[in-house]
Image 1: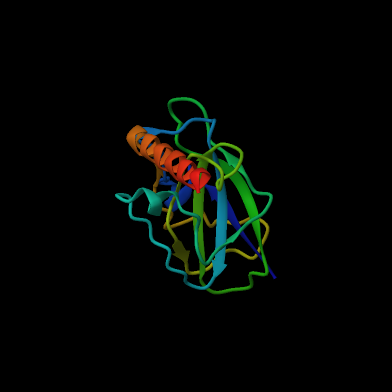
Image 2: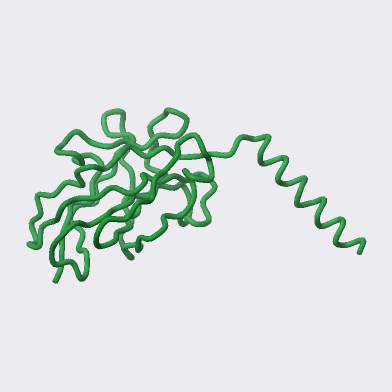
Amino acid sequence: GQGFVLFSSYIANNNVGATTTVFGHLVDSSFKAQLYYAFGIVADAVDINNLSSVSSLPTGLTLLNGVVATYATGAATAGYFDYGNVQIPGYTSGPITFEVVAYNGADYASASIRGRSGAFTMAGIATGVNPSDSMNGMPNIVIGVPEPTTIVLATLGLASLALIRRRK
């Protein structure tokens, strides 16, 4: 079996959309989005007040390999991506959980500017090649960026550990 869904934040939620922001500003075309999925219902919430929650990798879901959407340019479409139809291998029926990650860099795991939507579940998706399912339930994505003081403190901490280890 194969399932299909429209991987688009622009038409998500019955054409209401779902935006991606960094510090309240819509992201630009330097950002990418990828889709994770799991059959059934998976809980993987995001606490937007916790940087490690916002920027951690999704848990309990599988990355849909080869699908990398780029964000649009222009004032009217900034903060949105529109990849088009994607195939979900092995799907036949029932609920399916999705999570979208967004990042600025080579990939999500190594990006210093990244965020995720948190899991959202759809009751089912199309099994034909022309889906009308538009990622209903997709929340907005908030991208986390460490504060400069956090980066400085982390760097000093690592340098101190290296120095202590070298002395031993």
